[in-house]
Figure (tube, rainbow, N blue to C red):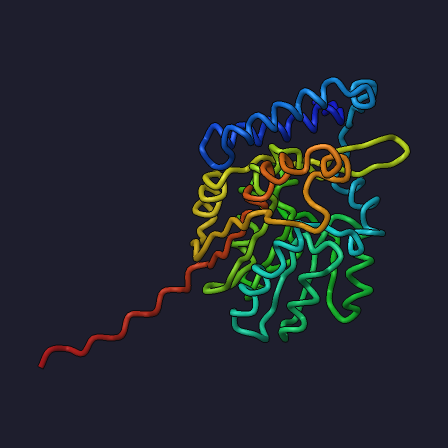
Length: 298
């Protein structure tokens, strides 16, 4: 179903999220609540906001979306990446160096480049030829291929490390991709996943692109932690750790320029303590050791 985007609705949603947090006892006192209510009155009576028209956001495929996004993806100030990279890189840095690594849905190759710097032989796959072109420019000696996550161009047990960053939300289901990761990683090998947190998606964090045909949203599944756990176990992988880093403070504040102009405190209440990402460190269980031959009793 297409989304109807309206600036006043967005601002009122932020105010509502802030008020719900006060009802839960997370923040604010009577004066804070009255401030939110006064701000809502100001918003709904402001002719500049009430006269603004909304926009219907259509849908686009990930291939079309990332074709538009590729040119400026690396230069965008993406707060999700700022939260994600330090934690993911800490996990990757603790793994044994010098193996074979697969960057699944590699995008412009930001994690592929980091893995190469750790001494890994890197292979990357993505469905977007435009993003792959950026990755090849960063790592001309790595192997990059256009492929889907549910049909990886690799044999069984080909990699010591598999990473898939900010991509599984675009999948209609988690199971096929997780099964592929389990197939291509070696016994004892590691799988690292990161993705936008479903709570942030419910606050409007769905990836969108803009063009002559207006704003269009890419697929964004609201996968819960239980959905991941089910798919992980069905794929035969084991969970080593799970992290849900929060949005925290960001330069310039949350919600964009309009929110910062009209309701910065409500925007902070809505986003700062909300989980931004869900990050998993998984492992394919090591192959069982052969039982030692028992000596016959004397």
